[in-house]
Length: 362
Image (cartoon, rainbow, N blue to C red; front, side, top):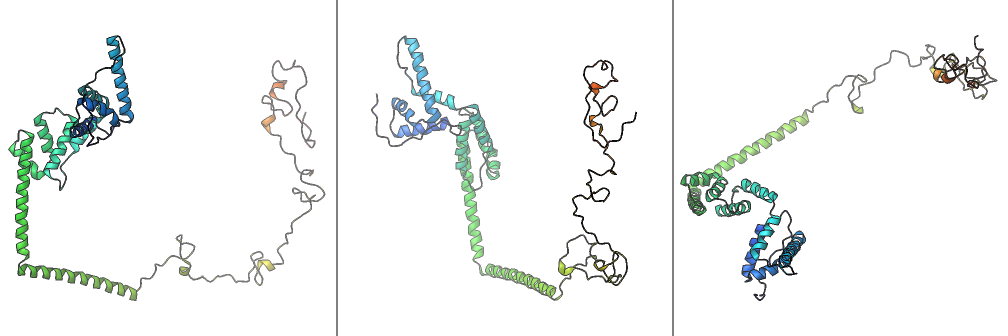
């Protein structure tokens, strides 16, 4: 067994979430183990210390199942021998789901070379996505994925060369990048030389002065237009006379009051002039009657409206009448006009009626 060495590089922890890729995690773990000089037996002992949450629960369940299977085979309690290759393979199977492969596929097809991104950065990031999606992808398919995401300036030149391997693609991209850099330097030197000439400087100064003079002229004309508007202010629109205007008009824009054809001292009750309706003697004085024994029906005192003899009685509603003969003195269940009810025992139900009802016609 290999003795534990001093940890120089501490690996990251793996929890088994959907956002974590077990393949990438094991790659980083292998790099840390290589830096720490860990052999396979040390990797097996160190890996559980860097698992957490769901991944740690899976590890305990996996070890328990392997020990149970070894005990059944041996016929006695024993510990199963697990190799590093078996553990890493089972870890990837447990946490590398179909959904993670679909996400890797979407990222692979959506990855394009960004503006200002170097070709080398794009190629290696594309290769990393290819390994996430399909580690055993054929070489021609890798080349096709890489070339499809290149910018137009690289795509049209590399596609003509028809590279056979990924290394040839990277070499061609580097040559194109160097060529474009040399062209850009040549253009910059030509522009610098032309700018430094006195004639070019004079032309630049004249054009700048003309643009400034044009902008100042436009501002002066705008100010003059504002001043002319102040001298000749725009009058408010003329609205129709109130109340025919349905729009809201400020009080200071109300139309002047129209003179009335009727005299101001005319009475609205007797239609005569010389006094108002408040001073009219022909208008009867209305005083409220506060007598509690005043009848509101016949307008006489000495009784209330409930005791009034002139007031006709209220009609009996049909809501409680017999539904068969419409009589108000019994219900349908006691109606004598129905067959079989003449021999009914007991007296029919008689409702309580007011005392001031007129006699029932015979």
